[in-house]
Image 1 (cartoon, chains in turn cyan, yellow):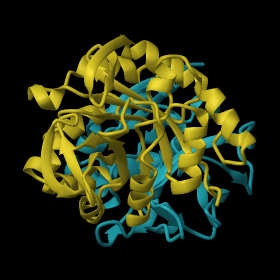
Image 2: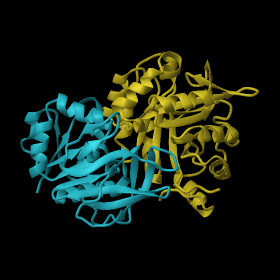
Image 3: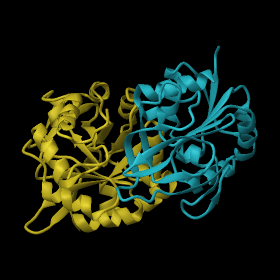
Image 4: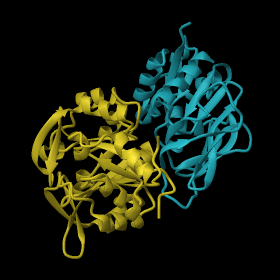
Length: 200
Length: 255
């Protein structure tokens, strides 16, 4: 069964290259979504994650992707990565207060911890509610690179501890998945995560 | 005090495209091999990241050579930092599009326009903006150098790192003009001062000659990462040797 994954390209700030590479290695096909008309013939959606919350939402609006993206998230399995997970939330507080895509009842706030921020590096995940995306990956390490965290009280799949502070490292609500870490930067474990996503 | 957060072990490639070269005090270049081969090797050895710095782009004031960077990125499924000759937001953007996860900047920010740090952080997020420091030690202060350790800036390292943090940089790459490539250990005092001056992660480079040098650096200064070049390029140790040695000495590293 072939599976075509649409990667949302929101202008200047997307790092679609490495995600595309990982999906291809995992055995999927990729279609880059540049305009609102590119949503046809895709099975799943990946929202990548480089940039700031405010800029990401601005770019989605500016490129007229917002309405169709919201429409398709409701019906297609969707994976938000890092910032892509964060903008699934209701509100973000990076460079001011910005309205998010509002699929997850959560706020995105700066990490407050007695250690270096951004939190950068490989770290473990503590799975609270196992799901298909993380199947077989419960003991793996993943690469994190972020200064903000999703603060929510529902839809939590895993937590990660950084310098004594636990934050939400993955979420799921129905067909919507989010990971704070970068599977495309997490060696073989990351490729396996994309395989799991393809097989959903 | 040991580290409570895993210290990243990073392979650093100093590049004169398409070659990995080994500079000594940033001078006396020796060609070691192709960047793609080196990147792949260090990825397979378990590096936490790879940094690619075109060390002549700024000096020659030529554009960044993207083909080599893209080819190197294609070998990696770990974070990839790229720098050398970055002068504009368009440079940042095009590097992200060919596979960079972080962009490393020095010369243009310090000699011409520090506002590029603010602008890049706002557009791409702080975590994607790394400021490279090439520190030169004087009697009682450290000066920032640019263009691969050749040009003075008159800026004080400890003031500059605070300034770039305020401007939104997400990470510091700290190199020492005096210690680089000599394999006699790191500048421990400088490293500690810089790590303690800022809240953002500091990756220390320049000077590893033995495994013990790396251990001493982590124990003394607790940097977020250590970037290794010479030790790896000459196959003295692999990334896995380094990680195993550190683990055996109760220093936390990733698997």
